[in-house]
Image 1 (spheres, each protein chain N blue to C red):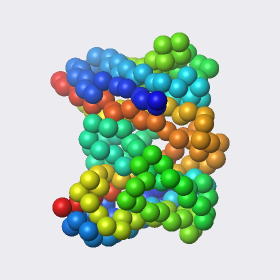
Image 2: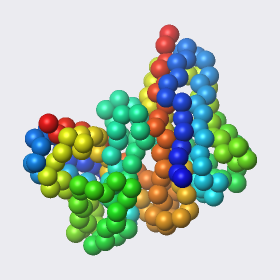
Image 3: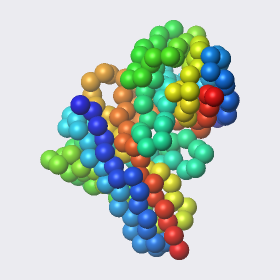
Image 4: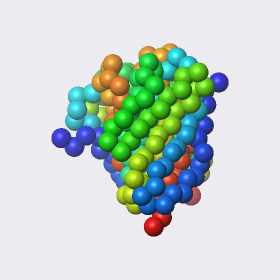
Length: 113
Length: 112
């Protein structure tokens, strides 16, 4: 079946690195995404990675993809209080044809001084 | 360019009442989606539309209806609200072939 799994909670100290992990099920997913949701707001696309890539870096964000293990991670360097939010991993299986996104339950990142 | 907007932001209904949630996008996107978000769960797709005048069921369509009379608008209707429909509803849109969906800010609905 379709199931994207994430740990529900992560607490880090300001200035440290955060690593949020995700496992997905469909090895044919073309894109894998990380969305950020701040309190009371909608989902904001943070970054995504194409399935033929192993790594993507974008400023403080690093996405690692292990296709063999169907494991995706998001690393946030120098985590700040403004990074406190819920982070959703999502996969995009090719079947269906309408860019169906399968979301994980979200990881709540808490950044403390 | 407002992106994706949703109306209303908050609503409280009594069981059995009806209402319509409005999603509007000004990006000329073909595809539009309605999701619901419940605590401890990811977003689940309710209905979607691949163009004006077309709609289709997603994962959790029961109890909802949708209409896409104009390309820029996607309406989600609850004919007879139930407490199980208490949730946060998100609308999204995208261009066919594009690599991501753009989300609205959400509507928080409580059914008593």
